[in-house]
Length: 318
Image (cartoon, rainbow, N blue to C red; front, side, top):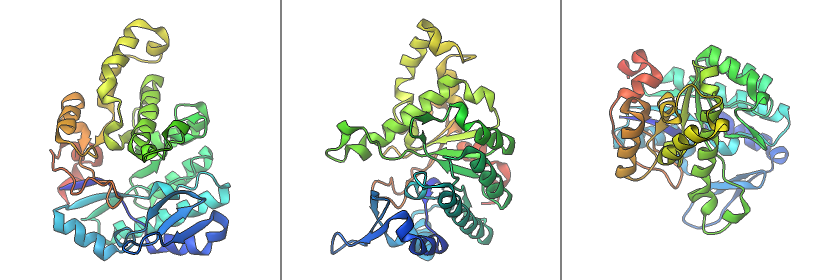
């Protein structure tokens, strides 16, 4: 069984955080007696720093216990460092990427990984992506944009050109929504996260970006947000409005099958609908382990998505 959406924080990254805690405003706060310390960076999006985030032996044991045989590990979104100057974001990216590359090199049968890049600086992000893939990573995990810049904006062109050239996996993972209407009842996480994915995925789809960069392998977190469920509305807009259809060579529903989606949906009916809508070769098992809202263990599904995303060689050598 595979897990394409799982996060880990190597020891070198923790060391970097402690060395730079004043610069990035990192805080370790004990909130509850029976829980680990919460880590907050730049006063945003604190989370419980569970031992399974940082203890590789424990992480592996939990995998084996639940039957996961191969995982695509990602850096955690809280450490993207997009809010900081280039020297900070490029430094943490390189430290994180090298640590994950070392982990993958030591246990290639169990792990593959994507890295992180200084996305707010697209030319440098392209350079860091190139470096990461040259040391054994499969691509990068990125947020859904930077401020008002959507990923389809020309601003990101240098990064996407390099990602396309390298045939990279780009795992698009949302950040907490900052919509002021969602401040209560955990809604920034509950619906804000899939909403941010929906906005990003819809923009990418309608922009024609996938035609422009056909070698990209874009994986959307959390089942693609709300996009697959509302694809009929996009198709209707394609029929009615030129601004919807002008960049596309086919209806939006056909482009759904150009992306990959994880199964972090917590509901079998939702997963079944996703598979029926996009095809079983475009859906990969995922958990979001070890965050609080992880779908653990990941749902076991067809290996076709794993084959199409990672390739036959890795899958057959798992």
